Length: 401
Ligand code: DI6
Ligand code: FE
Image (cartoon, rainbow, N blue to C red; front, side):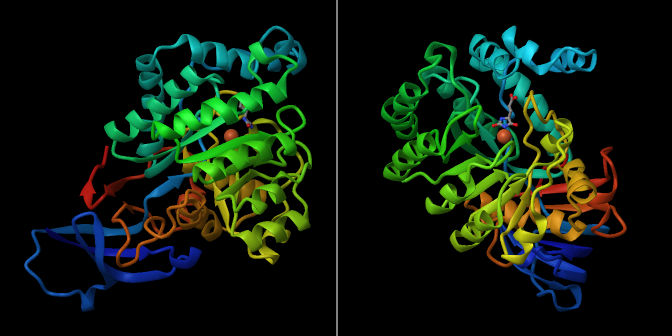
């Protein structure tokens, strides 16, 4: 079934640039883009449907390539306590922080996690997201990591969004392994990853490389097992300190290294050589009131692809809008609106290993796009939140909510 979409302008985002086609038309056949170009050259055919997009600007569907959408409870109470003067250390000493989310996630049933995550995910979808990555990492044992990953899979089967599930078992040390980080890593390597991968629940493996989480040596043990299992890796690296996790990630041909405020130019060179995408997370930078900026000039100079994501999580980035992240990438990191949009489309797709099929509007790619009633593409990084008038098309089908 062929469909013609016309009366629009397109920012195709091919090669990570706007690559604009004015007065454009697009032909979709099933889930794929069959033709795209100036309307005057559109092939004549017996179209099953013809859609008038009323002068909209069409972009690829937004891709949120780093989220922790599935979790129990939330930490707005801690947010409030901190603003009333209670220190982070005091909150942590009382069992707050990540530990409290782990408790709430373990206590929740799969259905309960699904219901709460679905609401958050719907908020991202209302903002034009058609692909999302969802990490585990608040279960921290086999049964509970499995529960989180199953919820991620179910979200992808239930809602009009492509979900990539990432196992982040090496996110924090579970209480039962207190002072035994190496034993927990061994458990991840010998039991958790092989079992979860065999169950088809793992599209990528991630870890948190930080002085308050896991060392580069421990992360490397996890990466080696992922490699043996044939699963690509990603890494939370250089968020709070410089351990050169991003260079380690590059050595393992990681899809991405994420956060990166404290990365060095050498790290950028290593990432450029391996094609590892730099995923910047302005929501966490903002929420933690960080001051160390990611090294934008080094990333640009060495040609590292830059993606932008929400990092949606209860502790450091309760962000329910990717467009708001585009704005923050521009205001906080001084990215251009074009770079920011590429970061939530083509480069985000590459950060998920989907760059050949998603992220830009080109012949042969999947027909995931948004037709926005805006004046120009920069509007997407300009408005702070709110809802923009739009139509969302996924797999060639209108799924506007
Ligand atoms: N980096 C972060 O900012 C979050 N996880 C991570 O690896 C923190 C998650 C949380 O506080 O719940
Ligand atoms: Fe994260």
